[in-house]
Image 1 (cartoon, one colour):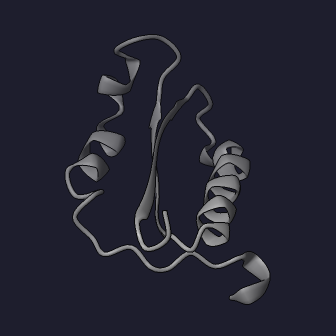
Image 2 (cartoon, one colour):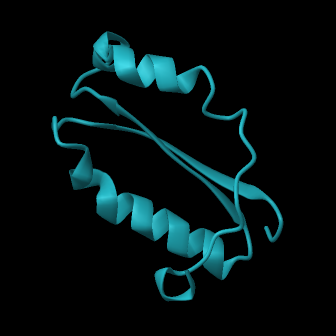
Length: 79
């Protein structure tokens, strides 16, 4: 997996995006452990199928989410 890019795409049911921080940290650390790049996490808000389609900010971010170059993942103590 080294050299590849790890991207996260998830839906959450809370209006506060910081509730996803543990998920983002875990994915970053997993990518760092495996020598991967980490492209971040695209979060959408919703609790049932189709809800995320009402999250206009997430839909806007989705248009360019995979187009940027992802940096090599690093553990927090290495930054």
